[in-house]
Amino acid sequence: MEEALKAIAVLTGYRYTMDPDFCVLGEKWIPRATKNVASARRFVRDLAADWNTTENTRETAELLTSELVTNAIAYGAADIPATSTIRITVGRDGEMMTVDVYDSCTAIPRLRRTAHMETSGRGLSIVKDLSHNWGWTLNPYGKSVWFQLVAWS
Image 1 (cartoon, one colour):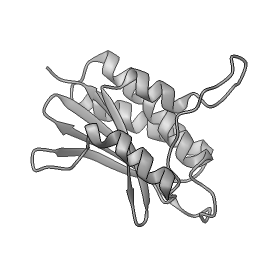
Image 2: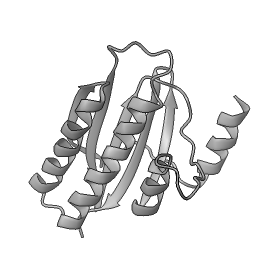
Image 3: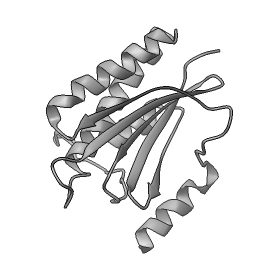
Image 4: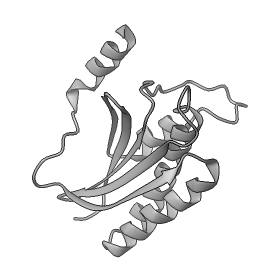
């Protein structure tokens, strides 16, 4: 619990909250299985194209979605039934596109420092480096990890 409080304190400088100006562009539920990461990527890329974002935004959103969904499958699965789902929501708030990945695990996501030759562990660092904003929100049923990109000007 102490770790959660410290992590929340770090994020107090920026809080992602739903407001009336936020428009949900699309939502997709997928089974928690590695084979469904590609479906999540296509969903976000297609929505970004449908809503006329820049090509760079589409590619970045696709990559970051892949990282978050992969994390939800790999690390958000402890003591969670295999039949659980992951929800991907894409929304617009002014010029910002927000992608929110929800899973039913309450473990707090952590940035890791990785050794040069490690083949995993860089996902959240990539999300942090390539997004405008990112963060996570706990709720009684799990958590959502989200990122924002400037997609429209």
